[in-house]
Length: 166
Image (cartoon, rainbow, N blue to C red; front, side):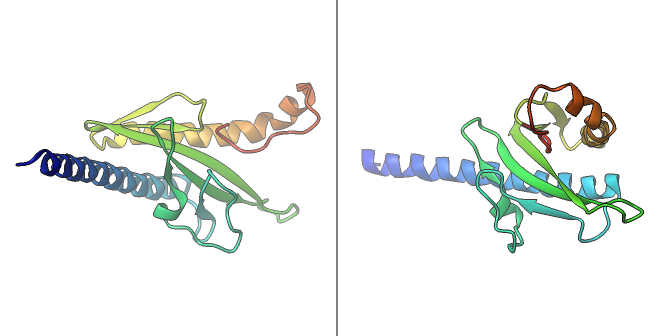
């Protein structure tokens, strides 16, 4: 085999490894999204995917491929909007942006809610590990609303930052 052919083979091997990694991460993202919908008991039409590396088109319906990107931090980034509303209908709905980050090493996925969150390990598709991360998402959203006014009143900034992850 010539040196050029060896380079071509190295490229092909590298490309296959990337595609396999991407497909595994996309598959896990789909599993994570489905589990999140079940865990939070989100009604149909109240959750959607959006990119977080650019301004999403308000009219677009994004697939995982259109909403996810591999960032320089080596994590796949995915935006998930959950549309919350006041049960009494007295207030307008609010879309909560969840910035999910994930990557895989061997048989373990590392997931986090936003850039500054801690990694949660989901080993080999473990339902218990996934459940712990889903509970973390739920508690983060809930605590944000339960403590939101107090946090707003004590902060020095003039505007409240809404959203999760960053």
